[in-house]
Image 1 (cartoon, helix red, strand yellow):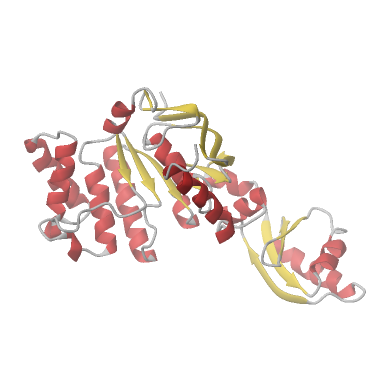
Image 2: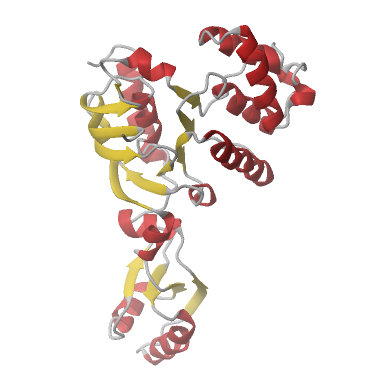
Amino acid sequence: MPAIEARTLVRRFGTFTAVNEVDFTVEAGEIFGFLGPNGAGKSTTINLLCTMLRPTAGSAVINGFDITSHPDRVRQSIGVIFQDPSLDDRLTGRENMRFHAMLYNVPHAAFVQRSDELLAMVDLTGKANALVRTYSGGMRRRLEIARSLLHQPKVLFLDEPTIGLDPQTRRHIWDYLLKLRRREGVTMFMTTHYMAEAEHCDRIAIIDHGKIVALDSPRNLKAMVGGDLVTIRTSDNAAAVTALIALHGLDIRATDDDTLIIETAHGDRFIPTMVDVLRAADPPIRIETISLSHPTLEDVFVKLTGHGIRASEADVVQPLREMAQVWLGKKR
């Protein structure tokens, strides 16, 4: 039985559709990622699966429990690490753990053993009795990870788990999460817009404007791009495309930042030929910048959606306004 199963899941806020007929399954023990820009529907999907929102349509089952008909059973079987901080900084690390244990009716003896084990796992034993307000950002995130596991959930939801952390701390957090999977066998469902972070996932669903546009392993997704990527900016991109179309076996697309991305089997061999073709054009086309790289998940996202992972402010603000109006009761 899958740990998570979503079927044609929909969530609307007024006229804005945040999640649009999403379908996927997550197997037990899998690290499953939602990759997309801000406003794509990642956090809304997590909120639906965690029963913090009711779906407008569709259904989802977590650990065998329907999110609509058995929300309490769902909550008992999951752990959640929210995007925003959720610790009480006026309490110590251990007191935050104890409060969580009380909410989930963890017996005292089990709490003592389990909290000691988890605090040791995230290297916070020495800070367990210090106020959380004295913790660094990375230490707080590690405590949230430990706290979320106290009641032994089968599925752990992580909404942008390393947002706002420096790269070194981000790597350390992932060391803990990967150690956690080896030790506890927990299924993880995470959202992110960090490419390096998504590489840790067994499978990734790429989501854009509320819809899943691709779902596969990182390796297979990157194979969709194929070959090498040559990125150029020229004195006349339109003329450059016209000149290069004559060379067979190329996939050429323009990006938002006025560059051309060219997919080709052997980039190192292609570049000298490309330079000759552009120089021979009438008038000659000048290459202003050029780079050669292997496909990344960012490249996959651009190919599938036509834009980068970072959404513009305009893409995000209007949906947020619609959502706020729903919460304030101005729309139904």
